[in-house]
Length: 178
Image (cartoon, rainbow, N blue to C red; front, side, top):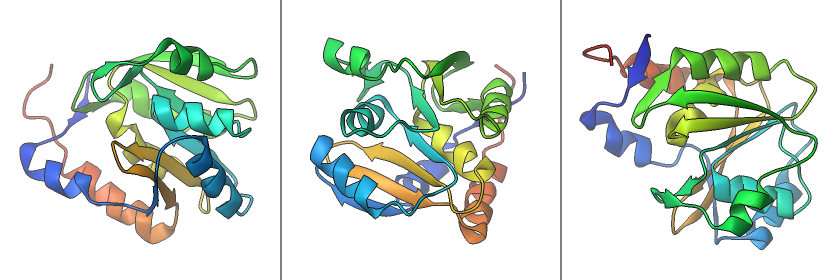
């Protein structure tokens, strides 16, 4: 199984903001984000807390990524139940920490074409899912991901943002198959 692996030298680069930071945590921050959306073709959320807050604020993302964890620990029962939505079609994929698997890439690509909201449950870690989501999302879509203890980041998908993210992905070669 081919996968992308996060090398140590890219960790610092990935910590930099790739979009606009909305400071704070919770539903109020999600409402600020929603207010600033301009009818994007796809809204994609990455992370349990971000997804929970968007749903609590009344927005159902087209695609959401969850792994039932936050800051490497288990999410609360409230967040666990709050990330569920009756309209979601749920897909489960394997994606070990620090990697992006082909299976995840395939499901992201297929999900971008779906008219039904999709929740991709990741058995492993969802942190890096924002990268292929940005690479595959239609132009003018938005990807929203959490930045622990700071807030949420809104990335507007542009051609230049796609190129920037593809350049990062191109540098994430695995040295060995796992």
